[in-house]
Image (cartoon, rainbow, N blue to C red; front, top):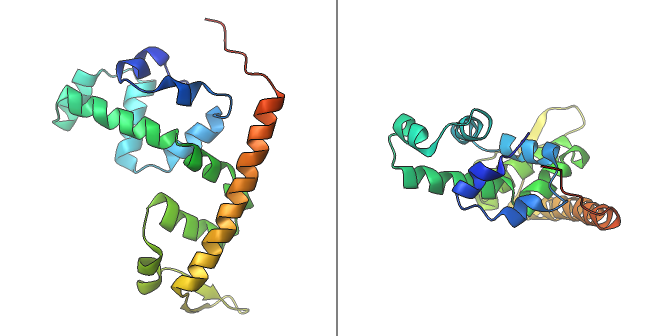
Length: 170
């Protein structure tokens, strides 16, 4: 994925977030993949197809300033270091942890709502869904997830510090 700096500069994006050595194309694509479908399509039109703010404003029925603000918010959300670390550590999670991370960290649903709506269940030996998981159990599982994310982020920072960042030739 290429993020065209001229277009992102037009949206007043802090380029320091995208220019560091920690953000890889794969992590950024995965992070964009966690956004809602409408937001993904908007970013795809802007970044890959080269649609202008005026064109997007006409499609969405918004002002150009509203489109610019939306694009800044989407790119900064996708480039958020915590979200990038989360998607980089995703392969280390169990399916149970992945479900909780998706509900709580990506969809931003509170733990008490996840428990109240019974969206997480205890896995039993015979693979049938068990009773709903309590909020305390969900909080403990979230701490495990945060530790895994922190380990992956620390490892990525060490690797980035060991290899110098060389900007691409223009």
